[in-house]
Amino acid sequence: MKTRGRPGQTLVEVVMATVIAAMTASAVFSVVLSSFVADARADKRDAAAMALRQAQQALKVYVSVAPSDPNYSPGAVPGRWAADPSGQWALRNGNHTITSLLADTPIENGGSFTYNVASYDCGFGLGSPPDYPLACKRVTFQLSYTD
Image (cartoon, rainbow, N blue to C red; front, side):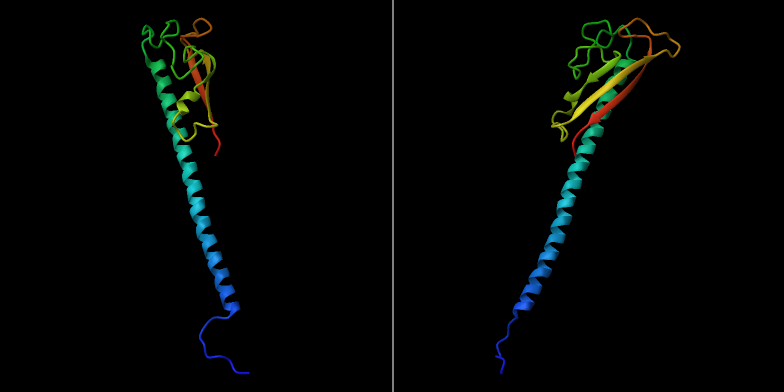
């Protein structure tokens, strides 16, 4: 039997080339997709760190201000933090929700941001409840979001 003299590929060669091309394409798309996912996670981590720094800076103002300043004192009407919808003084003992700080960030949907204040006597006394204005304060933050 004579073979024809026309150039071309056999079916096996075409199938093998297609398989190799498909494996290469899937490897490239896998790398590209994982880089997009990693980038989105990094954006969320950055937004979380920024929200945490913002909350820490805001609470530092309440600690370092003069006690007679009505904008930050526990007994005054304006002495509340706008991010906390409870209407309590920012350094009052207990849990405070500040999820509003996550607005317009990648972790806005499904995110939760709270902090807890606990008073302890560090030599100045405690003051009177519920604010304990003379006490030292220990603040712990809780920030959770979906990846």
